[in-house]
Length: 212
Image (tube, rainbow, N blue to C red; front, side):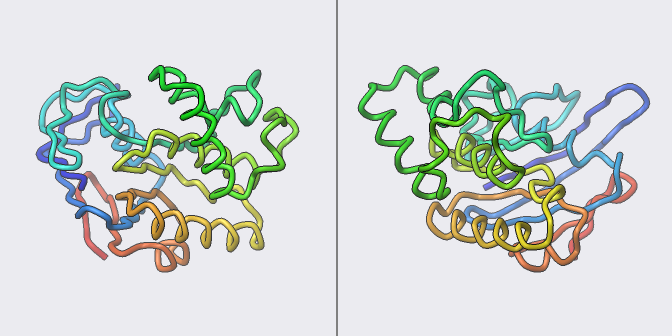
């Protein structure tokens, strides 16, 4: 569940004020809107990466407004994927588990699960620079899911893919959602993508949220 109430975020001249959004547990929500309307800023605030001036954020029935990003139970895939350039794919998938100091056998088991789910077993020893766009996106998704988050935030995850890869990744996102029951908030500019994936669809326009 994602519940944002009366949020205020200010960054320079940009202000998102008295903003509320609710996504039920297990839903796949899609958020659309013009560039610069605040979609990415909203995701960053939910993650805890962007300070807020007012309001409350509840995730999975917990008030996380004052919690650090790592304590919120959120997986986040930014638009640029943000893979660590000096880490092999195996280490990318293990990163959040290592920082939580899980036992080595548990980490290895989870990495293998993720590699199987993402169909990237053959990429585990590769470096990010050698990955295609679709491969890099699979790795970024796997890394975001590593700690079994209850909420997954996706910032235009399919925007740079060709038509064939776009269809393939849509199917992967459906599969992930079905197998994990994670609550998803997915930003896109594509109406077709929103129709394919979204249980519920919203548009952010002039600081107001509209249900589609």
